[in-house]
Length: 165
Image 1 (cartoon, rainbow, N blue to C red):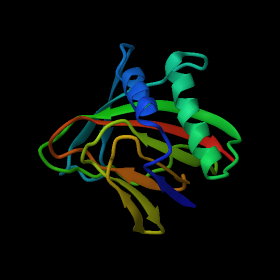
Image 2 (image 1 turned 180 degrees about the horizontal axis):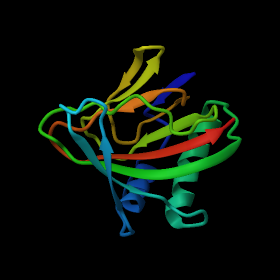
Image 3 (image 1 turned 180 degrees about the vertical axis):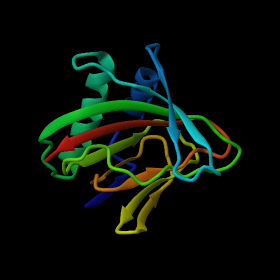
């Protein structure tokens, strides 16, 4: 399953999510080591909104709105993360990965326009490539995907939710 939608939120809702995402809370620095040492490290920042917080509720609102529009049952939400990736002067592709070992779905919401695509794999090949567009979201089977760093421009801002159906 793969769904892309850039028209499920109102401009006011998009603006509200932007404000919530960019509010002040603790960002954690992460460093992902690539399998190819010639590429080096990918650095990004992540935050884990707690259930019941304004950030968590905003993320659940957009998830539910997307799933309702596309008649997908939500099931159990396992993780909500806010991610920011700075520009590197060139695009670096993160290793293909799964967010969880169990079968699950992934909802990605793009908080801002940026470069730094998301790649959803179909076997060994990239089946879908999505460029971050403010207010757009994708839902896909979480079996294997990757993301790219922005090569220039703004920080890539994404809300990532893993859930069971």
